[in-house]
Image (cartoon, rainbow, N blue to C red; front, side):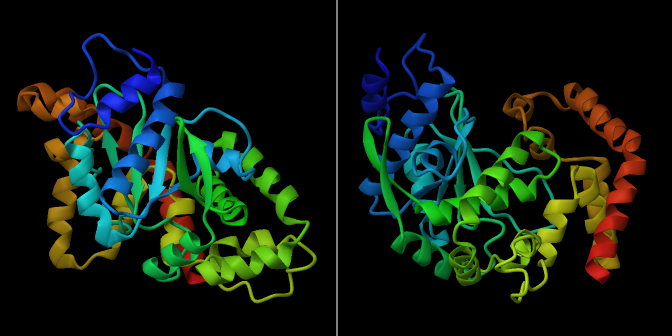
Length: 316
């Protein structure tokens, strides 16, 4: 079955997730899932913007490289309706790893017949203006590109540059994203104040302060301070750090439950990366629980170091 025929099949709610024996390549899955979610959103009268990935590449806001998933942004009020519509087509929400260290911002959808995921965002970390305000401003400036043989809505070139930059700065340990910062710098330095003004409108000045401080045209501007949420996201490189920091910060009345969750994680928590574990007998999950606990213990020194870095940054 050709990729386009496969897409038309899965667009129908009653169709199975994938025909028996059919295997999608990752590059096919990426563009077809972009077209699929655009089609489903339009049927549900939901406004959806593709962010990052191939759409960003098409508007010239990200280096050319393969993608592993599709990211979309919508209004929080439309989330349930879109998830329900995609569930009819074989997609299910991956249960997030349990952590209350910072607010959730997206839901990851998976489908056994597709090798790529769909991340549905209602908030993009780095944009700290009110969610609805951010979406409306991004939607007003949107552009149309073609993916999977279908026109889809995505961010404008300038807005997509900010998303690429924020995503790279949010994950400093991932070397592949270092080139993204250089890429964005080369694009933004031609009109830095335009991008500064847009970042200000979207509430991204705090996170992007160090970046704009490196440019002569904007280094004297008000660059604000990064929010607590951003400090956590950019400093903590392991889940154990988030759990420990959360345990330290919450009231004493909530500490026992949080500690128990960290030491004896729920079935949903350990099946975050592998949904097959969700249906496995409890005694067979023991090895997975032990490996997680052992990893946390062996990373203990680095975890404590990260917690200290977070507290130091927050106290400045």
